[in-house]
Length: 327
Image 1 (cartoon, rainbow, N blue to C red):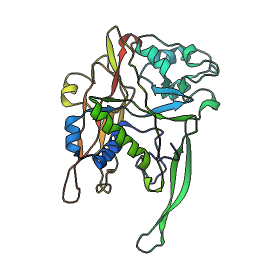
Image 2: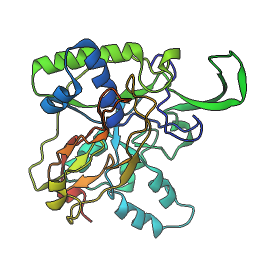
Image 3: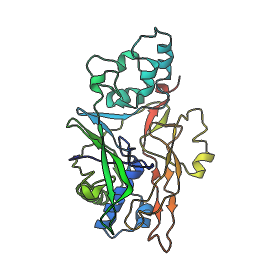
Image 4: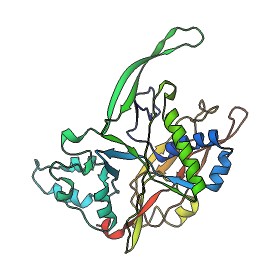
């Protein structure tokens, strides 16, 4: 990122922000850029659904970090709870871990268990947040005072003062996401939309230069699993009714967390209107079979709303060996 970014969470003011960009936000921003460049409607893009994206995750000192699979540290927490109170890492330290390095993820995906030694090596960051204070530098959050100016009178009202939080990434940090494409034409359109998005910015306050970025691409190889497997979510996911009936959330292999997504629409012409709240399974959830997901309509077209608004709930998932996630 060339400057600050404001991936805001709707609240009373603008103080709350997320450290990363979730898949529904990323997809919506790319689709808006796509429709500015190409003669494709939102309904056509959803019907074809020729690409998929994950959420964005940290890159720290060149190392990619992925969401911690839900429940994978339960055995380590039990082990640590039997040790002395001053032992490091503590159970509280383990509960704070959000992300693990790519090398640790591959180890878990292939069915290998991890030990305390794997997550507390000397002078090497393999989990985030790290237990060593000097390593907790993925992002810097800066809160700034701002005022809202009345556009008609050019004056400042009494309640116009507020705080706004911005995220700054150090030179050694950034974000990455994974994407898949059904054909080369889709990939070319996607790249064009992403370049435009990098120039215009993602998140709030784009009109004052927030959220602009540059990017590079590389291939990501999915590790081979040669045993029974489940699936690890790398995106937000809203299961279809059929998937729920088939037991995707009730299986013995299901282990997930929920997140509520809400807020106003981000597209031109509809940004004043609130979208319907949506509960989704979050990144790091474990599911018993390959998930598909849905793209629900969260705001209908009307006399005041120029087009339908959707929330991206399709799943982006990797296979993970059951041996690595079962107690």
